[in-house]
Image (cartoon, rainbow, N blue to C red; front, top):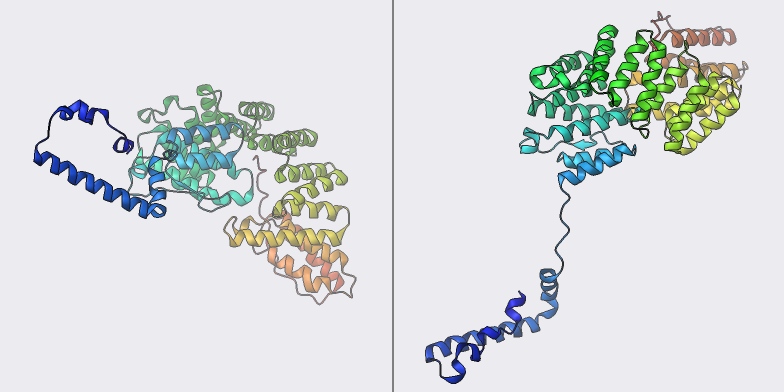
Length: 464
């Protein structure tokens, strides 16, 4: 554009020799006509200057910033992962995989690309692998993030379908299935992931993910064998050491399990979920080291001083020690930081109940029940995943406060007892609820009691 507006000395009369002679008439007419057109165009520009000014400025101004490349997004995702910022890692890995990220706590956290696009037909294995992995890691931080499970599985299926001979693609698909409570499907995908024909013979994470699936399927011996192989292949893998720790734990090798949990916390010290796994190990009844669990939660709080989950679990650990004062302080920190975290309200209610502050306990349990019902409506959790303590302990609190005149049992307690039995058949729930029915019957013999429900075996203790 600027060349058209410069004085070109190589087009002067001196340069073409016409200064000393005369042009032919035809050439003169042609240049005269061009001059007239240029002058007319310039006049038009001056007349419409305000209208064309933005266009002209756009043409001569700096060019727009280039869209970041896949490599840039991938590097940003990895940096965020190293700092424990999993939501930012998800955003960047999602963009690198040509997905569309949504805000945290969205059911479709990272929408798949157009299924007819090359990005969907042949997804980048390494980028998609990291995307699925950080989404799975993030689900460990909050029950409400269970909604990420299906999204992670969709991406896992996409990369496995597009790369059917890739160990990494098959193993991360297995991991997503395992995390979505589909161990029966995760095992065959995991076996394909360790197949030497798919490059799996040297893939430590492939063995780790298969170990997870075998452990979820209650095949503890197989889980241990695969986990040991995983660590031997990749001693710097968080997943390998967590898999081995879980397998050792359920094979009653507790001391060795602790060492693996500790190793996992050191590989990336900014990841929070290995500390929660370690703390759960310390709180297991055969270990019973709540002070060490509290130390693990304090480490999480040095990473993220606004972790409502860490304060909540700290509250529970103090309560297990019988220290209701520190327990209540930790729970109040949690409910203040995140008043939508149902687990915090549950434990705060339990602490208040143990302190015989039944009125305030009822307030906490009511908040917990309301939040649980909201999470069910949003499909963040299933009805069976609701926290039963908020129902049966609430009912027991009403029974305790029933003086025979306020009719708390009739108006509130029985409703809560009946409701909790519709979604939980846990032995402790059934036992305490039955005790609540009997207690209310002693207050008012005319109250109708439900048909007794046979107890079910107590579930195995959680590790994560």
